[in-house]
Image (cartoon, rainbow, N blue to C red; front, side, top):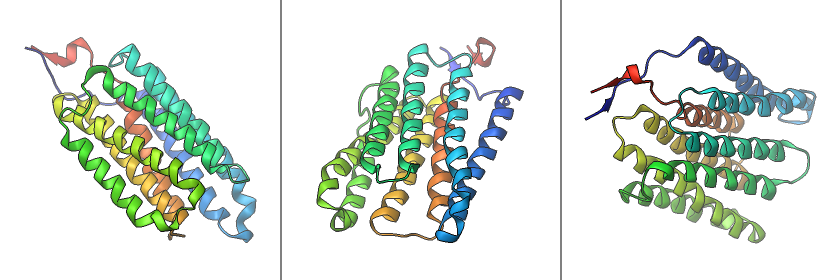
Length: 240
């Protein structure tokens, strides 16, 4: 029987990527906070530059991970990060591109679900998915009156897919408890749900104090964990 042990320390390359991603993420958050209000609009350039840069660096992390959990898992996670990068750009551009951005992130979550299903059965066990769907439904009930009629169906579909992504990642981690990669993916998926929940409350019920800080900090942490979940273990890190 083969059991996976804890991961070795992060390589120098991963540490450098982590530092660069953290710097870009902090710059993106700072740009968003400084640009709040008319007096700070001169800082928008920092947000526009750093926000997609941080996601692009997360993409590089997943792309460079060796060995991968599987080539298929890497491809699907990379597709999800790329769709998230598109969503980042759409949501930060001038004009109301909320629905196109929502669709881009919907595609991202579909890619992540496909990645998590590559080595696990759907909703097995069922309770993590049920818990995530219940969480999503509770948020919808509380926000429903504030969501405009044209957005209700897109938001409903998005919440269902987001909750499915989180629930499947959690269920997968429960059945693969010896694998650090599965645990990272689950943490990332659940924090992604938290980030989008704060974003929804800020958009439909807000404004929330320091919303950009909470949304983006949780988002980049979630993306980092999902990208790190691509990294498998080498033969010398397995124990018979």
